[in-house]
Every structure is written in structure tokens, then in C-alpha cells.
Image (cartoon, rainbow, N blue to C red):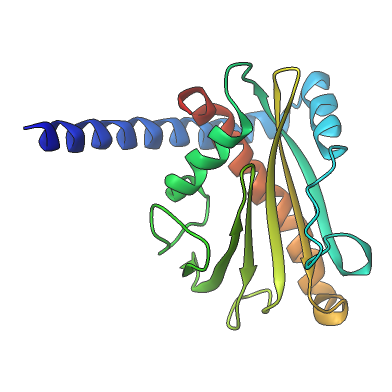
Length: 201
């Protein structure tokens, strides 16, 4: 009886989160058309936050492809860790989660939408890092880190991407342009989704 109740509660929670994600996705176009000054300032503050450094994979310098900051709104009673955990435990919140499992763990390999293989490189206390594998549209060896932070109740998502080899994408201008422009819009969708779902984290 207890097990059945647990399953039903989890199912209800997933249904609620899916509804929240749908609402966030519908709100993206409206917020993109008219970004209030306050949201712009918040995004700039978020972009200025330092990312945690991993000595084995620096995300700055000539290898860096992009670094974007997004505001997730004010959630004074929610920890950045809770928002990260909500994403990694409900990975269908990820806009292009594709065939990846609902709960992702380090070393997991799966295909994002469009048969784009990735590996989960690391899941930190406040961060998630993935890497593209051979067969990915952007080529292999691109690392993308999602870092969650909070300052005075304002939650931020900082997304940074870099490559193993500086020339991997820069030699192909279309690759780099598509990566940067498409990524900004894609991670904006993720930030809007997490802005709404963070209320349940």
C-alpha cells in the first residue's frame, strides 16, 4: 500500500512539473519579445558570476565558445543545489533531453534530440557538465557546464561551453555561429523552464 502511494505521488509530481515546463515554454516567446530592464540587469549580473573552476577542463581562453548568464528569478528559500538536483533528477526538463534517462548520473551516455550523443561528465553540488561525443552535430570534444548560483535571493544559471581544440569549431564559421546563436536561445528556454519549476524544488 505504501509503495503504491509513493508511485502515485511521484507520478503526480512529474505531471505537475511537465505542466510547469509547458507554461514556461509558452512564456518564452513573450519574455523574449519584451525583456524588462530589470530582467536584463539580472541577466547581466548572472553573467558576471564566476564559474567554479575545474583544473582539468578550463572554460576560458581561446577554447571558449560562449558563456551566457540567465536569471531564474527570486527564490529566497530555494538553494542552488535544489535547482540543480531538480534538473538532474527530472532531466526531461532539459529542452533537448531526447532519449536520455529521467535521472542522469556521471558517466551516463545518451542521445539528445536529433541523435546527438553526449556524456555526463560531472554532476557537482551546484553544477552539471556534459560533453559532446563523436556523431554530435557540433562535433565531439565540446564541454558545456551549467552552474547554479544565488545572491540575495536571485537565482542564476551560467552556461559556459569550450572545446578540447580551439580550431575544432572555429575553422567552420557556420558551426561556431550556429553554436552560439542556437545555444543562447536554447538555454533561454531551459532558464525559463527552471524559473517556473524552481518553485517546486
